[in-house]
Image (tube, rainbow, N blue to C red):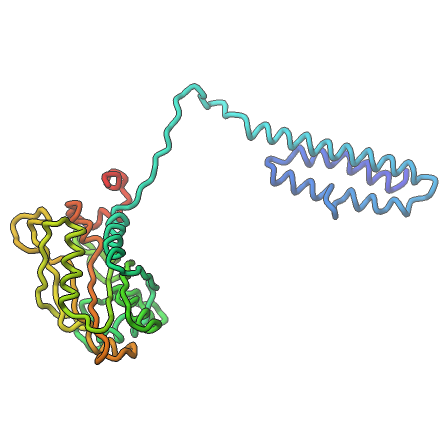
Length: 333
């Protein structure tokens, strides 16, 4: 028997058993490529037919075609078997049982609250801008008039990375980045996650969400700030909402204010006003840090916590509920 004939017969015997041993379509395809692919065993054998003796070449060619057809048939048989196995229902599946309606998802209550906030600011001409959560000292503190020795840093102690960068403590960093790259006028809001080394309890979290805003133009005044604040909270909380600006201190605004909202409008009892956000006129030192002329440009900035507003809007008394992924809680919104 010619060696080439023996090789064809050995392949015809081995290929079907290898096909039968495969357990899924991917393995079957790999075996097919090994035998029938362009560089497979069968094509390689067929290339050797030209070197066979002339008197044996015809018989070997006929055998090669028969082996090729047999191997292809074994492959198709196994492919059909695997397809039938994949499409057949498990033995313990009762097709007479009623179907299960897929549950539709919904937005997280924090996302719903943010959408409501952004909708109001869109109506006032503000653009939504996002920025990186990993920041440097310059954008998070220094450019915001809070140098390394400033006591206000103690209130915003954050988490530092080994390379000296940090997790931002406020989305004011986005305001700095926008002012560095865009000339006035600017009218933006910057939502996002922020991080502080707070002890986690019912009203504090080491990771929470803020939205901050910035408006810079010529002749912007406290009156513009007050009108924006009043309009926003009436749109968000209802026409009965009353707000007031209470003097406060922030290193990056001067003058600075806490924004209080009437407790009655929030459905709260036992107090007349509730602190709800912070704001102020942008400090000239902040403008100097981004190469704006403070003699020409003025502006105001504001910031508020998304969780705090969501808790007020929905009467939630524990901030940790937002992060526990408890569907019993989330399905209420």
